Image (tube, rainbow, N blue to C red; front, side):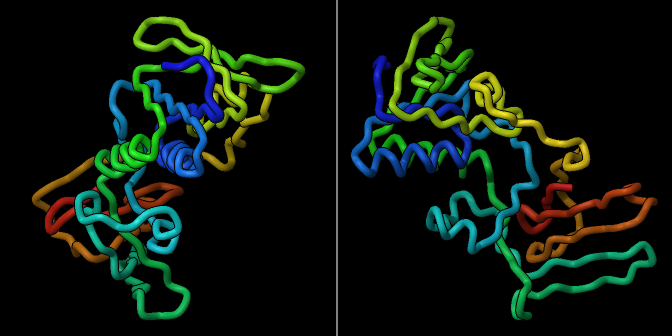
Length: 221
């Protein structure tokens, strides 16, 4: 680990990895740090993404695509279903990813472009000079270090602890947040080309239940 880079990226998720790759491809020296010991874990979403959104940043790869979605279904409490097929105008479709492989591939792309990547490295405080963030104090595999950079990117997720410590207001109003519980279920009867959303207080009071397929008989529920 060097002590000076053109860019320091805090967070090894998709946003941080793509930013690191882009900056490195432009010829900048880049350091990407991730607090966890493994990229892509734990998975913290249902793993769905729109096709157009994905294509803006990378090419689809069968290694990390679990399902190619052709439609969505909205199922009312009485069982009535509304089908939103991809061939109808305005209906966006997407992929269900394997986030563990997807996230790691993006970080590998950043490393392949020349970025230095360090896991088990936590940014504990910003280094401030003249009111600007000039780097970060980090703990890397138990050892403290200072990393200076011309540009510091906080890509540390919804918690945004580093950004908050740097003085940014990262507050997310409670009205914009919802709690959920998700299980990966297998040996279940599903349509592997459809994402299903069940509505009604019997299945999900004041919310909805989703079924995102990850194969012929496996889904995030």
